[in-house]
Length: 178
Image (cartoon, rainbow, N blue to C red; front, side, top):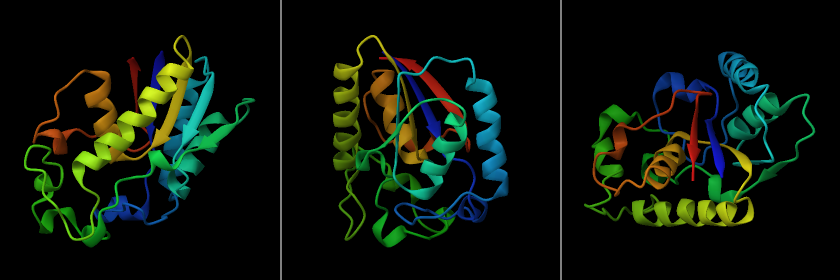
């Protein structure tokens, strides 16, 4: 299966460098322009199915990218960004951000979604679409945290404590064969 993984366009919270998690923040004007640019990059790419996180910033990015195509966008809660709990809305430079992504450390937070549970959620989604579209071409529009996990899955990487550094730019995409 060919998989296109798109991160949502820029939001005002991205500019502020705070964790958005489940906060339903819309795209800003730059984010909309970024999504239009990605639409142009992918305009001649065959896509069989599109899945999106239901959060505004991802859904709006998916709508802009697929504009003019006859593709239904399927919302899937498994593509939601990680629930950052107590770190929601917090500047990531003010705490041990890398620890939030430390798979081996497996830190249990009071409110934030556990890293291993996050991996399990995303891997389950990927296993399902891989089985449903084995020879197809699928686009998912999602969040930065999800793109980190997809990369581990697609590249057969063993999760470690270094995934915090993986990041696709706003409205950027990665292409994988899985």
